[in-house]
Image 1 (cartoon, helix red, strand yellow):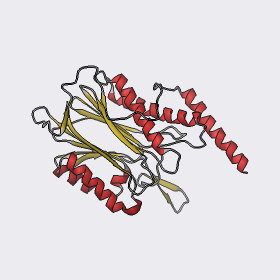
Image 2 (cartoon, helix red, strand yellow; image 1 turned 180 degrees about the horizontal axis):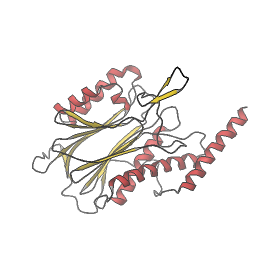
Image 3 (tube, one colour; image 1 turned 180 degrees about the vertical axis):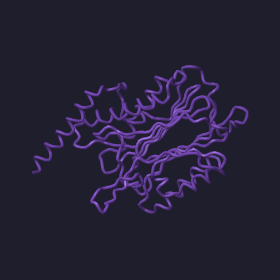
Image 4 (cartoon, one colour; image 1 turned 60 degrees about the vertical axis):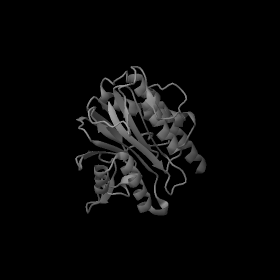
Amino acid sequence: MKFSVFQISRKGGREKNEDRMGYCYTRESGLFLLADGMGGHPEGEVAAQLALQTISALYQKEARPMVGDVSEFLATALMAAHHQIIRYASEKGMLDTPRTTMVAAILQGSYATWVHCGDSRLYLVRHGELVTRTRDHSYLEQQTNAGVVRLDRVNRNILFTCLGSPSKPVFDVTGPVMLQQGDKILLCSDGLWGSVPDGEIVRSLSTRSVSEAVPELVENALRNGGEHSDNVTVIALEWETPDSFESTRGISTDSIMDGVFASTIQAGVLDTVVEDLDDAAIERSIAEINEAIRRSAGKKA
């Protein structure tokens, strides 16, 4: 397996960077992750870090050297990350839960499969064209003449799902999608696509290597966003076939021994063994958080 990859994260005009990204791989499989911790809730950066660490830890256990059922793994790992965030909030006695978006892709053989929750996006570009991109989980509330609120998925400012929310997250799994030589996959937070049009993203990826296109796109996003620019985070890769691969800018996993795992995701919040919580445990954690919120509201009244 051979690919070129480039990743970058910039704080922009915010006080802190709540985005997290990274990738890890074995001899025959690669996992690429990006999370955008949500403002308006506490410790968004913690939620994002927990999500990355949980999914990558589960991937390390599963990919030996390949993940068996990729779609099932992504769905299960995403829910495990959600559970870890809920448990973190419960153990800390937090009145509100940290929350984050998530987009994650696994490449194996000649196929890519991905999962996303929220409005962090994945783009797949081929031969200068946008093959597909994820659909944001966001609302636009419009009041009709009949007084009914219609909900359309077009407003980037109102997410209806994320990891860490007391409600069960909604997510989409896509794939497997067969890859071709030169295909480019880009994962990004809304700090990029909110300031740079899709057409510009596609053109840049189509005419430059990922190591050249990504920094330029990020700088354009920061410039367009102005002094109050959002965090901007991108991880992008180009899929290579063995006979066309250039080792100067890429990663080849062919020399990795079975059982070896490489990762750019650093340890942080999660210093315990990752474990799945059953539904009853999650419900108890959510109930404890809601009870703390009610007690706090009662004291203020």
